[in-house]
Image (cartoon, rainbow over the protein chains, first blue to last red):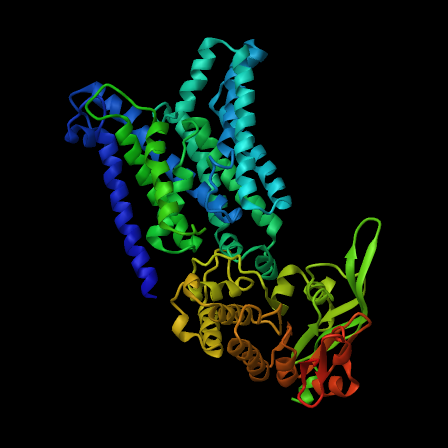
Length: 343
Length: 264
């Protein structure tokens, strides 16, 4: 099998590139730290400047890990959506899944004041954000799936996703009417997207849920490949459609839901990365695609984050702006270049 | 194949097909009793809208029957789990909506789904079977091609190979010759004939190519408004089953040539 060897080589190259950008990402920032000190603080060695060590260990390292999780997780959830809905334009953002997560987060951040006092502070733990965001995205995803069983038209499903987005925006604006300026600001900053606000504790929560979602995704590889034939063929091959669909949905809501909870609604990664990967690997076989999407998602996110922190300056751009500026033209280019986008 | 003909692969008993909703029942055809033997090529013919697809959907457990029984092997169809059914019968459908971004080999390999492990790893046995069906359908040169590069005729051969890879005793094809030119219609049906006699599989297909079906099939199931009859092409011709297939105002069946002629 010549082909599998060439895939392996590509995986090795991509892993090396990933490693490279991981260190580039850690090496860059508003404070310039010599490369040697970056490495020694990563390895836990003593360096002359304590604040450098603190920056690398408690800010830059968790941020780079978050970028890898966010990029790969959103990419994979986009891949799952595109196969499940048999729609090349599907993705966590387009289908309203990110909006569902936003709604959950909005209810927690701004609804906390409505409950007030003790309950309010209890609601503000990292777990509650994750649960609310995952539930929100699960809810929207279930609704989209329920509609998609009735409505076969793939364009209609995308429009329904957009409608869920508007409903969410409306509820959020009603909530914001009743909440304090401080909470509103907190929500708006969350909406810009950020990879850098996670403590090691929160990162632990994110990683745990991400790994569970990933396991569901890996378990679905065979089912996803069979679903490429269409539901009727898949059924004739003995596939339990209901169960497979449920597993794929759980994987997507866990991945997209938690990532959105911690990093904000990050646009276009989920839609663009699977397409980019299919263009380069030229296959729809999920056994090949899933690891490739993982690597590309992580690399692209690390690059986007490196750009966002505007090296050598004190400014920090919202990550959402960068992914949109890079992602939207990629999608347009793909649409124009290929007469028909494939899933 | 005389002696193996008594080995029945699929059997129905007073089967009624149709659609049932909460408060009404619309029966499309009833009292269908057919028997498909090992190694037989069986054609299902009938006018548009007569219920050929409904019959195929019922025989493949996609929709429930109204009454009567269906046996696959010696067991009622309801007793088969979805995996057992996937190992007993495979399908070639009319839909072309599947992803074309797979190689021919990958697509055929999906036919091994009921046999592979949780992540779909192909064992040496799976690979041998895939190579074998690629040889049987004569598509060695297409193996590494992408499905979007294929013509309709080539794609149909690939889908037949995929069904063969599923390694089932019975293969059911829904109108495998639509969209094909005259040569490829004959080619596909001839391929099915060869596969049935070489591999001993039972192949049932619906088609509008009545004259080709008369020449190639061991058995024909003729569906008309009044009844569903099954028999050899010769029996049908001598009984005059084809005369009632279509309204008689435009075309008539010509017994001598075994085909339909336009009335002059």
